[in-house]
Image (cartoon, rainbow, N blue to C red; front, side, top):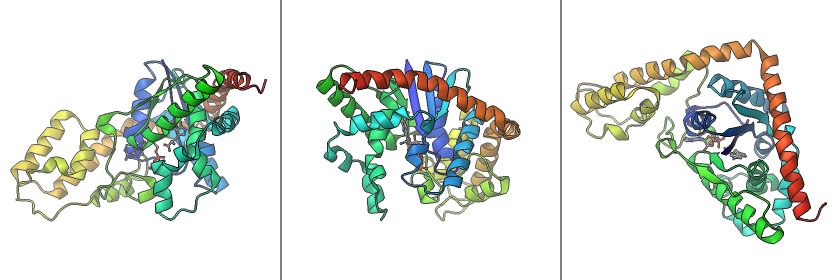
Length: 321
Ligand code: ADP
Ligand code: TRP
């Protein structure tokens, strides 16, 4: 089974990215041939600071490795090291109806927020389709918000196959229902764009402060809270602790006499502990940046060896060769 996913270097990685995309991807590295990349071309649609792009790109690589991506089992690379993605993106754009892109939620949401769109933002799903199809990927692990983009990919693969003969594998999104939408500190979807994130790595005090500011209702410590499952801190706690600690906390909230201060303190302890091992590995990687670069270089070589074959297949199919 060929697995592929990507993440943009457009900010600091947070718990939503980790539980929604990175952790499922890391778990899948044992179940097939996995390709994970840093979508730096995609990041150009929203980030226009070259220095920051370089920094975030390196940081995504470090953080992904620290969290357990094993370069012996999965191929980690930077998208722009494989420029064939862009060539295939052009080919796919010629079979892509405008309406398909106009219907994309992520594009519409950005417009609704007042972003003035560039062509790259509009064409974003076409490049994403190329990213996926160029590896003959079968499974694409992503969070719920990327489902529609994988559907566009399926449409474009089918359209191209119908027009030019069987060329592409039609992929499936793999969305884990339990982690489809990690809440942010305001209860909305945790996202870099909403300033409601809790970072995976970062200063202890800053993380504690974020957790302490998770929005709560005004019930007192004494009051029983029968709807504790709805609480955002409880929902995050579920990801970072074992079943029995989670259950104990839930029971205590429901019984009353256990307040939101206790809950947040517990969440912070569990959160900090959960990422302790990754934090340690991250320190080691930060001291060995040459190794990180080597992983990306080797990854690019491996990725390119596959992408160039599929790209050629597409070139031949549509008569460029
Ligand atoms: P952001 O919304 O912070 O900009 P991205 O759009 O860069 O995050 O998402 C990168 C990956 O992380 C995607 O696969 C996305 O589905 C996943 N992801 C992001 N936020 C969440 C969340 N709150 N819950 C689950 N998955 C998420
Ligand atoms: N659009 C994805 C995101 O914002 C990143 C991405 C780019 C991607 N290309 C991909 C994800 C291909 C999966 C497969 O999260």
